[in-house]
Length: 126
Image: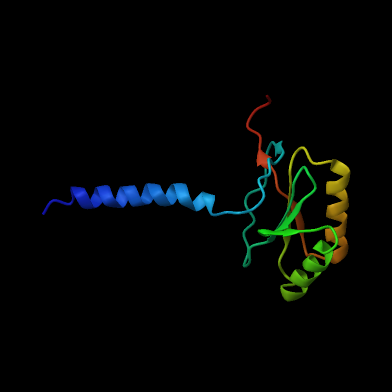
């Protein structure tokens, strides 16, 4: 029995899934700042929440866009539902530092057990 056609079909399906799956992530497009010696990916029993902040001031909690009036209550609700989950703050590298710091302070005030800033690893100086 010739299995070559079967292998061809499986490889085509694999390529299709490799292209489509990254497109399914509907989170905000953010260009993260880069640093040397990044920490390894957090490993724990539960994945942390993700809060994204774009250069134009839009905020996304997981994939849900939040407005400035309701984001704090949405974060409090999420923390009450799952009090042991940490938070990862993803802010675009061009976002104003003062606004990112204010957002970080708000998350601390809400009481998340840990807040991390998401960055990319910098391999060499440009």
